[in-house]
Structure formats: structure tokens, C-alpha cells
Length: 548
Image (cartoon, rainbow, N blue to C red):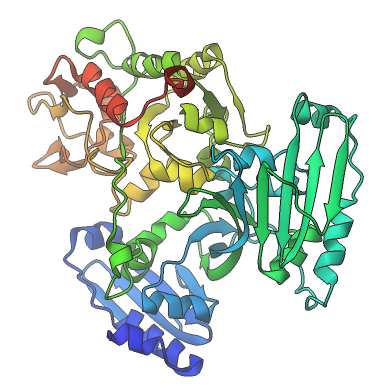
């Protein structure tokens, strides 16, 4: 048994001290490139593990720590709030987590405890759309989508009284008998020409509902045959909160059979920054938190942990407003996006959650994400955040985003679909976004040494084109260094330089160079067609029902 796993068996009073000492004494390589990039300035951290305190000081070429004391004026204070979560980390258990911030701008890492598991009769993965039609799920569905991670967390209510015998049954009966106005415009839109049959199983109590175009029926103590949707809640305390409709933070997910799950988010770790404008993504520069966030904190990963998702992620930033090769009279991003928009069976447009989170003052929040393909038909978004768009609307969205100077990013990202929206990615979910230099997640991560690509084999610029600097024209003015949002560009021997393996090829440096010293070298005249072909090899956005 590993040291960490044996440590996890200790009593709580001993465990928290042992865990803290392990974090503080963890070897830190101050010569590491990521370390030196992350700690150009001194960074002070206070730690509190359920009452056990200590501090860390990260300097350019030095790391110090001390147990039992905290430092004045820290840059960040990190508090572990849940000993069960600590034990799980040491045992190597996989714990689903998600970030959020409260009304006091304290960041929280929340574990996701199961509330509802769902099953659909058709197994078409459309549970979100069915849930969105059931009145009691109004507030739940509004928590779906990637924007929930930037939205202010709801203040948790006071602890509820213990669940009494028969209380769940009583609350279920009250929920079932809530008046349903079948003449309501939204109700009629949801159930026009169709019937929705729902079975419930809450802590062993069963019930059913039938929503019809002109009628609503319910029955406690009995299920209906051939239910379109079956909902199971096993935790009685969570069931009580849900049935009382108490303010709660929800998140979607998928089980091993790709059924939709709904979680309640419970804070296990809080983070207080001295500067409230600092992003939580800056935490990845702390070695121990990097290990936690990347899921490799355990010394001995299990066989299940070592299993990798074989679905390929791939994508690139596509430079805007730059003459390149055969496309001197046509904006390259428009050509690429247009190709997929014209083919897409379904298109969802939404506002930008990143610019909403940071209240961007430089670019419009309206020009946000674009999702394409059959899998997007299973998304349920609040109308204030997104909508199903026509091809004409999508192309207008694209034109406006490019005109605003935003850099398009297009590709497949399985996490965007499944962790972000709770929608199974079956190879029919294409993601696109329009990034600014101030709020983009990729920019923030890259500043701390984390790859900014969509993952997979997509590091660097688009294949077939290469960024280059003409040393005769470059006078080392530093304009490109200042404008590089990813902070990869640097001065070398008095000239601008960047590692091609790191450069994302966003094109900002080319656009601002006063001497025209930076350009893209088109190594393959078919680079646009090849990029489109690569995306098509891993994502199919066309209508699958036609093929069937």
C-alpha cells in the first residue's frame, strides 16, 4: 500500500496534518520551465486543511514552506473543507468536481454528488429535452451549459431538518398535485401533438405523471408502462431539497451507459485571492493543485484511471483578416466555418460565457459559441443564453465575430459536450468559439504553462502554415510580445522569437507588427482543405436520419 493510501486510513485529526505536510514537503523543481514562467514574481500561499494550517512561498529560484503558521498578506488562501474529499484524493478515487464563485467572489471547487439518474425509453440521449418540459426542473435545466461555471453560485440555505418517516412520500404527492395550466402557451408548445410519460422512484417511493396536449394526469404508488422518462433519486436529503425547490447548484453529467445524470454541487475547497480579478485558472501553476486538477494526485493510479478516452480531440485557432496563399480575397475562417455550417443538421448559437464571466469591455458578449451536428439536438439551453439557429443566422454570427476582431477556434472537444453540457458526444458535436485576448480560457491557461489547444494532436498553428520572422525587418520593438495573448513570444538576441510548437497561430502579432516582419509561411497550399478534411474525419455534422 502506498504512503498516501495508508495515510488516508488515519483518524481525521491526524490525517489533515499529514496531508498538509505532504503538500508542503512535496518536491518542487524550481528549474522547471513551467515553474519559472509561472513564478516570475514571488507568490505567497496560505493553506488550511480543515484547521491544519501552513504556508508556501514560490520565488523565481526558490521554494519555501512552513507547517503550523500562516503568512501575512498572501496572494491566495486555499481551504480544504471536506475530509471525505481529502481521503478520496489520497486513495486515488475519481471525484467529479466543478468550479464556481459565490456572492463574495470566493472561488469554490465543488464535488458533484448524484441527485437524479435518468433513463429514456428510446435511448436517444434526449433526456435533457424531456426534463426541460417538466415544471419542477425549470431551475435545474437553467444550470446546464458551460456558462454555469462562470455564473454566481447560489447561496446555500440553512441545513434542513432530518428527513422524517413518510416525509418524502408527502412531498412527492404535493409535487404531483401542483396545478398544471394546460392552456399556458409554453405548455402547449412543449406538448403539442405529443404525450410525455414520466416515472418517478424517490427513495423507494414510486409515482407517475402523464403530460398531454390538453390534459395532465398523475398517480402516486404506481408506474406507467412504456414511460418516456424514468427518474431515480436515492439520497433522501437531496430528494427533500429538490422537492422543496430550495436554492441549489446543479450540474449535468453522463453515466457509463450515457444516461443523463444531475448532480448537486457541494463545496470541498475554497479559494480567496488577494486580487479578486485573478482567474481560478492561475491555480494550475501550484504543483500540488495541478496534480489534483489533472487527476493524478494519487501515487498509484488504478487500472480504471489509466484507461484513456480514445475519441480524438482536435482543433485550432484560425487567423483572421490575413492574406494567406490562395485566399487573399477571402477570409480563411469564413471559408472553414461556412463549409460546416452549410452541412450542419442542427446549429446552436450562444453568448460567450468567458466574456460574460469577466464582463469583457473590449468585445461583444453576443458573439459566443457555435455548436453543430446531430448531438447538439439534445442540448437544453436557457433562452437568454442560446438558441437553435438557421444557417443564415449562423453565417451572420460568424461575419460579426470576425469583424469584431475575434479569433475563431474550431474543432472537436469531447469535454465541451459531455462535461460542459451533459450531452453524449457520438462524433456529431462540433464546437466553435470566437476568442478575445482578455477573457479566453485558452489564453488564461497558457499564461501558466498549460496547453491552449483543444487537445489531442493539435498543438501549434494550423498544419501547413508556419509563423516566421524576417530578421532584416524586425527591430526588436516588442510590440508583438506585448500583444501576444498567450505570452509565448519573447525577445531573443534582440529579435522577436517564438517556439512554433507553442505558437497557436492566432495572427495577432502579424496584424500589429509595425515593420511587417512577421508573416505566415504557407508550406502546403492545400492547408485549408486538409484542415477541413481532418475535422471531418472525427466529426460528422450532417443529418444522420437521412443516412439511416
